[in-house]
Amino acid sequence: MLRNGRLFGHRVETGFPDLPILEVSLRTGVCVRDMENLKRKQVMSQKEKYKRAVKDDLAYNMMRMWQGAVGPAPVDGLVSPAYVVVKPYPEANSHYFSYLFRTAAYMHEVNKFSRGIVADRNRLYWESFKQMPSPVPPRPEQDQIVVYLRAEDAHIARFIKAKRDLIALLTEQKLRIIDRAVTRGLDASVVLRPSGIEWQGNVPEHWSIKPLKRWVRLNASTLGEKTNPDFEFRYVDIGAVKTGRLAKEPERLRFDNAPSRARRVLRRGDTIISTVRTYLKAIWYVSEEADDLIASTGFAVLTPGREVEPEYLGYVIQSTSFVNQVTANSIGIAYPAIAETVLGRFPVAMPSTLEEQQVILAYIKAKSAPLDQAIDQALTEIKLIREYRDRQIADVVTGKVDVRGWRPGPDDIVSDEELVALGDEDDSVNEEEDGDVKD
Figure (cartoon, rainbow, N blue to C red):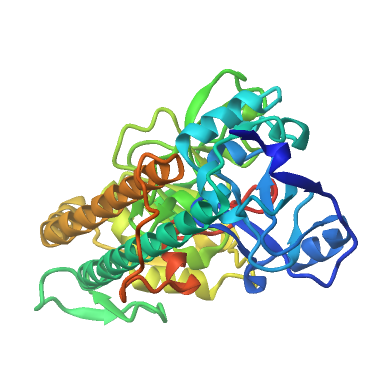
């Protein structure tokens, strides 16, 4: 057991504007940031303040180390001023320590050594990090552990990718069911008429066509600045939503430590759609009790009026034709967005009666049920394999499993491209600029 100050030195070097920007994923470590998905002007103006990380240095985010925001630099690059950069001494393999530092037990220790006013924004400064004790196997054993865990990660990443490919196919099948039902109805013999909507085509003759804002109320309720600081809620951020479902559980926050964009009040029966980064197609129908659900202002909240079956509206908003219209009318390249006033003007065709909407809704749910079940099963299997990976890493880096005699086989070939699948489904930059951490 050695303190981290015996294993790493502190690197504070600025003034390297030509190096690439690096960022950290909570699951896969540090990588080069995708410049196509970047607020270019903001980053370019800050580059002189960014810290240099040499290849194989460890970089961690001071505010997010307790979540595992740490990893070795894959190349020489720059990290945000919110990071600490440490250079390994010869007896330390930074990749081994990256695995160790992301274990649940070590992150618990990080909390003990971190300092701050708000618990989930505590900072782990270099002065505290260097005092933390770490188990130190002999360097050859560290190297062996890294090779073994990378090979295991490759197998797990292939499994996750196969499950995600299956989910994408099942989702595509479900969308075909939705698209046909919400644009044509269920009666194949019904008379159609031109909708006058370029992206919709013909619709049943008896359906009504109105701007979206006449079917729904937009952003009916928001939290005010005078909200009780102790008010606790579940926060739905852009990264938590996929088309038609939540990708992860909402984060529980208090108003006094929540981001300023946490303002949209949700109610059961609402549908939310992202108006920023619209390429994510983040749409979700709120089918659960939502007394404590708050969404980001990056969403438009659609509360259905009396003429609309709430869940039916959710399917209309998910339909390919509506989503394509949203993306086509978004402005911006790196961060495309659409104004809520533009969204509200979109013409939408729906059955005139609640009864017909309910019949179509029942049809969609019946046809989608086996697909939803298969998607849920695949998501559960991804969750379980990740739990297995976390347990395996913890056992290997702490010596509970001895891998000194392990030798790689022909299927243990590892590529960095494959390991990307270990990240979250959409491992995109968090909306909050707290040091370029990817959630």
